[in-house]
Image (cartoon, rainbow, N blue to C red; front, side, top):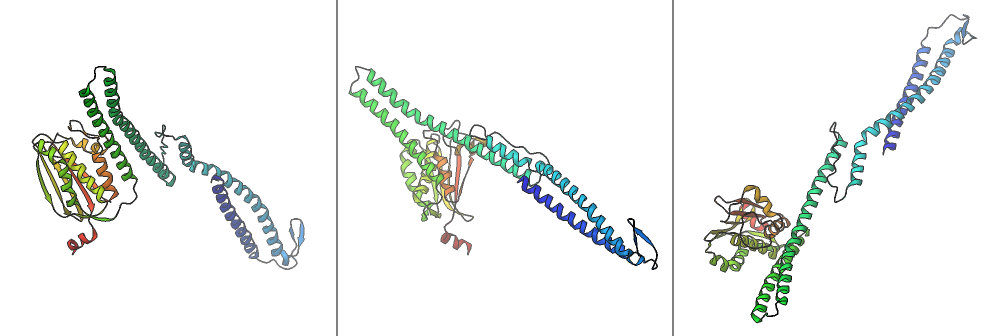
Length: 373
């Protein structure tokens, strides 16, 4: 690229120089032709040669044009050479940020994503490219850091039930007096640990599949119809904890995957029940608002700081002070499903303790038409 730009700049200078020499050659001829004529017979010497007065103008014009071509050729060569050298140096300075981008890209790896170009100077196109490259590196580093945390957390979560399984088996096998009751207790512990691992793996697979999905099935779904099944699955647990459950289920027609949208309602209700306080409350609301289908779940619970809300959507983040069991993937799956359906999910703390989560999805076309009319 440097060679091409240098040749282009030098070529442009050469064309301009040729035009200037040609214009000089033409102007000299015109100026000499305008010289007043001498009387006939007047002796004139041109470069030591006697020239009749009538031929003076032609002789002067030819001599001047020859001199212009001679001097112009020398000047042309010097200008082109100088233009080539100056262009080579200037192009090198202009393209230096591009070399920095290339050198930085060569040095990059998963362990050295903190390298940045940091171009200073005027905000031209090259500096803008370098700034864009630095911004891309920031996003890549954030993605790699999130991936590392995800892998570390997943490994830790999977290691816990496996450690429980191994400990229970080792302890029971080391006890020569273990009876049927002890073996039954070990079997129940192993069953709970395997169920926890199974739920974790299923959640990880669902999260990965949802985040990687380009499209989702286009089937009509009413968010209001997904709530009763979610409440029925947690009704016994909510009754045991003396939770007051209120619902306001208005039609909220969307297009998407009924299984995934049912999982959204299930995860939100499950979080609201298991991360609640004894004798607390739980509210589920669906409807159409501002051209969106809305599923909102609010509940009492431990106090959640505003700074902690965003972190709750990261995998395996349960929040400080939150109670209840789970894999920490519930809100991550909710966010992934909402994005896959072209929507979004927002959360905010409830005054006095608790969390309010709202999922907004595009309304189905036929459901939006009446409100538009």
